[in-house]
Structures are given as C-alpha cells and as structure tokens.
Length: 187
Image (cartoon, rainbow, N blue to C red):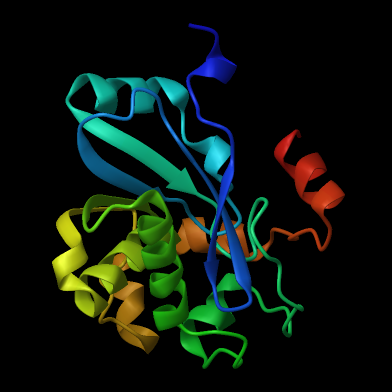
C-alpha cells in the first residue's frame, strides 16, 4: 500500500478556540493508541514504520499536532525564552498544562475513543502524564519517553536533564513562521 494510503485524511478536533489536526493509521481496528509529539514537532515526525509495527501488534494508532505545532492552531507568541529560563521560571498565561491535556481529550472524543493507550515523546510525554492525572479513566496505559516526571518543577528538574544537551538547546533559534520551521527541519 503506498505511504499516503496508510493514513486517513487529516481531521480536526476542537478544544474551545483551539483546532487540532490529527490523523489515524490504517487499519483502524485494534486497541486505541494516541501519540503525542514533542515541542515544535508535528505529527508527521512520527515514523510510519513505527506505526505499522504498532498496528501489527494490535493497536489502532492516531497522532495529532499539539497546539502551536504543525497544522493545529498557533496562538499569539509570548515572550521568547531559552529552554533553561523556561524550565526555571514561571510561564506566561497563554495556556496551561491542563489545557494541553484537554486538547488530547478533544482528539480522543473526535475519534470516538472513550479511552486509549497514551504514548508521548519529550513534551508529549509530559502531556501524556498530565492526561493520566487529569483524566485517569481515559488512559489504558501510559508510555512517557524522554520526559521529566510531571510533578517536578524548578531546580529539581535539573536532576533529570543532561546539562550539555540543554546547553545545546539553549543556543537554538526557534523560527517564528511556518516557513522558518520548514527551513529549520530541512537543514
């Protein structure tokens, strides 16, 4: 089956004013499994081969773009900070971790899934943890990859971070436009 035919056409879920792009891997039968990606990573970064393997193991796989990522709603920017200060200081009031967890629930609702296995990578891992805390009945299992524990904040976060890697991330310049994001990924 050609790659484009492995995925259903993009669909949309709504959480208040936020519209979330998602798609589902074919075949659709099996245990529901939702994949949450990391910061600045759209759903297309989830390898199709990985999803094929999950489907072979009996999962119905869906992936979505988190708010401010991919084709989902992009909200007005807040003050730009590097990852170090973002970890150690209070964030602006643009939205909360609960809002982002509720985004995933909106995707589950649009899929017609009362519950699902949750797989999250990096920021998506933190989101998956928050979903399990906020909506425990909606989570069949939780796989959190490359994410700090959801209850850790401030300086305690440093215990879980490789400081050399964090320093590299601090030097990155994050694009402000869709075109800039495409250019950054293609380098």
